[in-house]
Length: 117
Image (cartoon, rainbow, N blue to C red):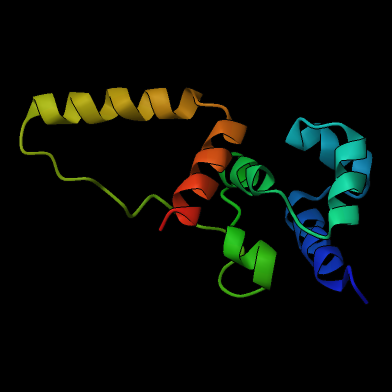
């Protein structure tokens, strides 16, 4: 079956989000319901959905796509070390700006960087 992998990935997304319908999922992702039908027709989960789910609920993109690994990722154990208070303030300012970047833009940049490696 051509869309078996897509269907499995969508089931994993529904499982971790608790969303039962395409409409509920579309609302969570901030997309039109027709975008889900378009993705199903293409047979692939868009990268920006993975980033949105990572941002919203710390969903593990690898688990969504393959079923491997943990359902969620934890960033709490990652603590950057700063040599000075200025470095810490600079990091916090960059982190704040990054959180404001639209998920679609992050997804596009990720795909661009991967394709140029």
